[in-house]
Image (cartoon, rainbow, N blue to C red; front, top):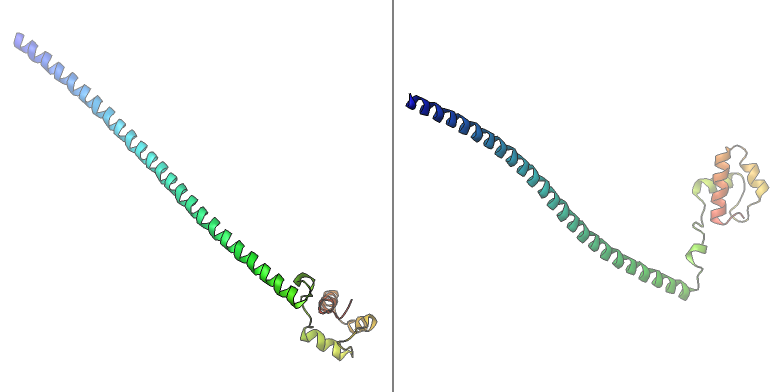
Length: 150
């Protein structure tokens, strides 16, 4: 009977031990999962840090290139200013953008008997009677740009 009790106690102890081992295994699996997740999170931080370092290097390269381009631009402006001063020309901003009339405008004016020199505003208005308002504005702005009309 003592043997049976001993075997019963051993079976109970073995069952308790197995249950504790299962609980420990479950806890170890959870811990392992948590550690893997933490590792992924930390590696993401490292990737972000390395990307930040790479972008700051790129910024430095771009700033160096910007400085070079600005210096070249300043040199070109100085050379252009020296050239225009030597030629005695007006500064580029004061020069009209366009000195010639588009061929369609010149053709329309010549059909109405208006030449390229000195345009009479009354004759111009009479010549543009058949045009829409937008077309009249366009013709007058072209004439002003070409310096043919004040």
